[in-house]
Length: 122
Ligand SMILES: C[C@H](O)[C@H](O)[C@H]1CNC2=NC(N)=NC(=O)C2=N1
Image 1: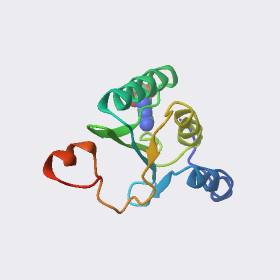
Image 2: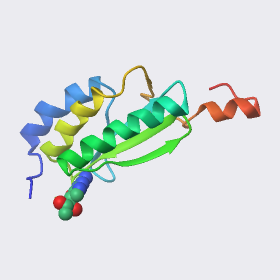
Image 3: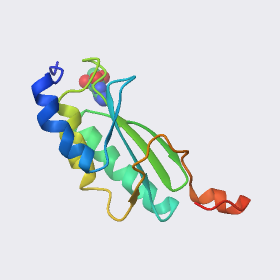
Image 4: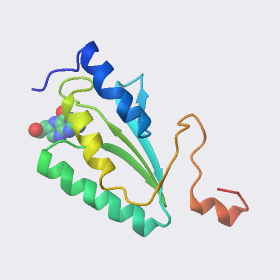
């Protein structure tokens, strides 16, 4: 089983991920990132690539997809928190996202293209 990150490892590994738009979800000790793609098709392409990566690494994200938005969390369930599997997977996922807008404020409501139908401004 992978070891939980030590405090020193967190201080080394997490800040660069923060710069890349990953947030720390304190309640579940996980990394979270939210992408907004130009279409559902692009979001689904990304999900497919991440799914294949997850299978090859046997390490799986917890995620939600609403139309063009992907909201993804990484944690190591068996260890009960963050391990190197998560930080390494976060970096690998970043290489798969392509052209997508990152929603950095994770406290803001998630707005997807579907709201256009209701007169919203995504
Ligand atoms: C049996 C199998 O190795 C485990 O269930 C794996 C699969 N994928 C996993 N993914 C994640 N994120 N955490 C785990 O603990 C985990 N465990």
